[in-house]
Each structure stands twice: as structure tokens, then as C-alpha cells.
Image (cartoon, rainbow, N blue to C red; front, top):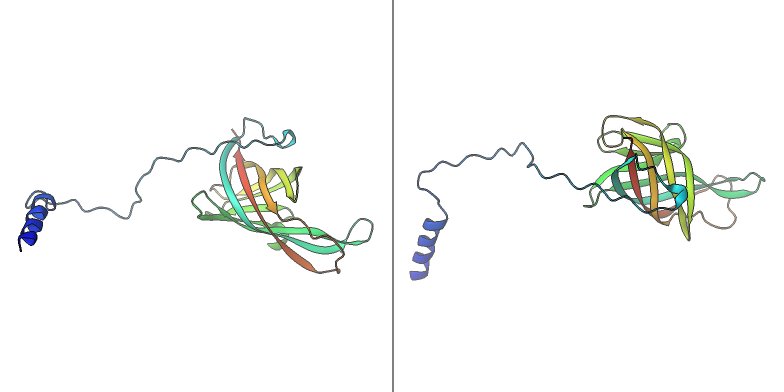
Length: 194
């Protein structure tokens, strides 16, 4: 009984605040404002992949997905695995999915790699410059060919594909028309013009 009385007194003193004071209702329709995140640090890359300093690093996204290969004739007529397109999900530092990465060939778009954000903005790249990454798909610098929308990818000028793991085409013979998917991960760095 004595413990209950002490708890009641403590609550009256510390829990209630001023007797009869009205509390302001919170507006939960507006998200709380937080300080903007610090811009990501520019990655260290091989000389051939450098993006000039006048292009600002705007976003880094981790990717997890597949490189899709199809069996087709190479320039000499022999059957070989050739890259068809990538397919991956993009994630921010907190692990939230922020977009997708895919090949235009699978969406009825011009050939080449695309990144599309959940906000509907998109960047289509080409002009790849590569650097080897032993045992994994190469590191790349790609130049934006076109963009669409008004969101996070609408002003992208260059993209880096770095820190790749896996994704390498299968070795050996293949049968014409067959496809295969090879798991890969990478980090994509998105740059914007000044």
C-alpha cells in the first residue's frame, strides 16, 4: 500500500505537469525535419575512371541483383555467353530500396543500362570506360546519355560502378538461345553537373 502511494505521488509530481494546462496537439501529417545528410565521400578510382571535380557526387547506392547472359554467336561465329542486361535493386545506406537498375532491352527502351528511382526519375547511360576487378565484373565509368523526370536521377551526368563482386559470365560452351543469371553486388556512385 505504501509503495502504491509513493508511485501515485511520484506520478502527480512528475507526470502531469501543470494542473489544467492544455497541451498542443502534434501535427503528424508533416514529417519531422532532420538535418540533411552529409554528401557522400568521393571514391578512389583508377585513373581511367576519374570523373572531373566539377561534377558533384550526389548519391551512392548499393546494388544487389543479377547480370543476365544469353548464349549467342560471337564475332567468329562460335557460341558464347554475352551480356544481355543487368537487373538489380538499389539501396541507400539505411537499407531502404530507392530504385532499380535494368537494361533498356528488357523494357522496350533504347539499349544500355538504366537506373530508375522510386520517384520516377531515370538516367540512361553509355560510353563505358572499364577497369578490371579480378574475379568480378569490371569497374565502370558511364556517361549519362539522357535523363527523365524531376527526381534524384534527373540531373545525373556520370555513374561509377565500383566495389563489384560476382556477375562474371559463365565459362565454357553454351546452347544458342539459352540465358543464365549470375548474382552480383556493386556500389553505384551518381554525379551531377555543376
